[in-house]
Amino acid sequence: MNVFDTGTARLNYRVDGDPSGAPIVFSNSLGTDLRLWDDVLPHLPPGLRIIRYDKRGHGLSSCPEAPYSMGALVKDIEALLEHLEVRDCLFVGLSIGGMIAQGLAAKRLDMIRAMVLSNTGAKIATRDIWADRIHTIETYGMEAIGDATMKRWFSRGFQKTPEVEPWRNMLTRTPAQGYIGCAHAISGTDFITPTSGLRLPTLGIAGDEDDATPVDLVKETVGLVPGSRTVIMRKAGHLPCVEDPVTYARHLTDFMRETGHV
Image (cartoon, rainbow, N blue to C red; front, side, top):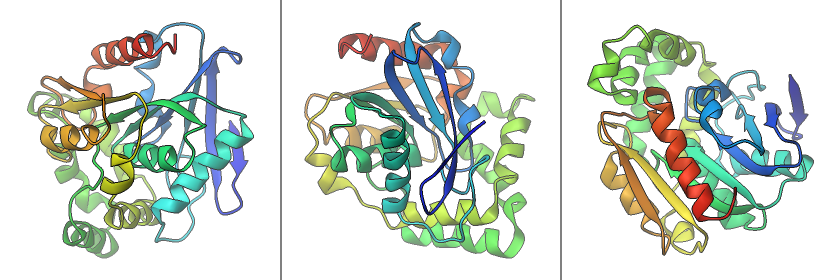
């Protein structure tokens, strides 16, 4: 286990693959940890330097008291990548991870040569929706959002399988302060203007059964970046890397080849 102290949080991170390879950085969704990508990694091309981390309040990272700002989440990964001497990475962000990708690209384009915005938006949901969810967690705990979140996260077919249970456990075992902190960050973020000013290769990935960040939201967000494109994964919800890791990895690999990352 590797831990990096940003000064305001201690981040758990993992580096796999070739230490001298082209860097690819993964940033996961709200209520998940770096294991989100486990099934994708075996299907990626060899020779990559693969970097994953738990954002503050999640996984094995420390959990400062809520609320968090999106600026703090961007600073966390900026500091970690500085520590790891990463430049010109492919940054893959899912949901809040995709918002972090947009924020980092707007701030430090020297760190990112291309990005994948997966199941995300420049703005996700409304302040009222996030306030209601925060209130539910503060009143009843993480367990209270478990069933509704699984319906948002996964396709109808996947919801009927036993594979859902580990993800529900991962969500409900997330520290309430960590989830609430990041929920505040999402609630206060609107990246439409900064993202529309970005000029870098960008791929969008959407799930056609994603109730959290629908296809149209992903397409609108990715479309802010000139020359970008979006692929739609069928029979997949908010976490297509879980439901169909082989196809997800293929989209990443195709994009890496298009951008000269492999």
